[in-house]
Length: 170
Length: 170
DNA sequence: AAATCGGATGTTATATTATAACTCCCGTTA
DNA sequence: TAACGGGAGTTATAATATAACATCCGATTT
Image (tube, rainbow over all chains, first blue to last red; front, side, top):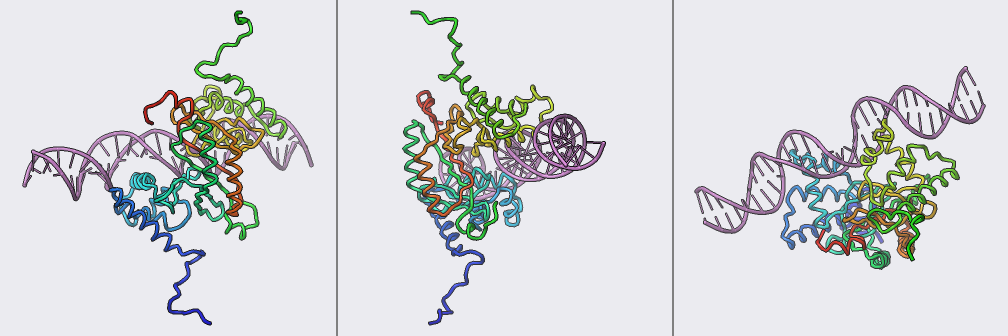
């Protein structure tokens, strides 16, 4: 019982998941949402979103700038920050406040406010809807009489993939 | 039945609470903890802590620097950042990640990780232990197999005191 | 076609936040 | 006294972010 050679896709390089799928879903959703909302996912914004989605790691603005320059030779800090502002407004990326960095949002259409689990080892950021946490949080905020505009819930530590690999302390 | 003049303290300026009590408790706790832990709450560190405790607002590092200079003419950015690093390490202040700012911690002795409710109107920061939220969060993180090092839970909005005052949008 | 308008981008400059690296001082200890 | 270690002084610079104004370009109106 051999695996059929002709249909098996090449495995993703160093990771266990099909990252192309992550990217195409995210970009596809973004394109769709922007059409629906009547806003422009311009070439620059599209490129920045793609650069962010090259990995699940949080990326710095100036790192994005360096990576954008080969594609947009006129790119300056304002170029990046404007694109980031747009992508955040549209809920297509998260700003990771505790890192001054940015990461793609997997649930752009749905609720945007999630737990972010930030791994110090691999630097990847995992989003979790964490409905029970959010529910308890809503209750707490109601009790406090606090009118919420936005939430940043950022947990730093070691992700499950890295826990296995790293037994030295961080 | 007149109030006894000789014992009534002057009311705190624009606020409903006895802020001197906040300050003296915080400073007292800090002094005590530093002795217990065998670390030095040096004059500079003490002054920075006092400056932070002048209000419940989140304060910027360079704003603290400006306010420290009259007391420590040699103060430079490093002076402030070293003091802030120390105070954070000792759990005496919070760094508000989403503002790049700092605020006193009211529960220095106890658990340090709390909800921070950050009012956009008055800029004050309220800490809340929010045990139910924290419990749900612990469960969520256990389920995710994530080893926690630190948490930042920051909610932006309008606090209950300001909701009454401000009906224009923010 | 010309005028105009708004959104996006180009461009220059600068503000804000934070750290590196090296020195000095001072009190403790070997 | 010498060595050490923590705290602070000092200089320089890195990293992050925004302001302000000019230009371009496509859509709409005149």
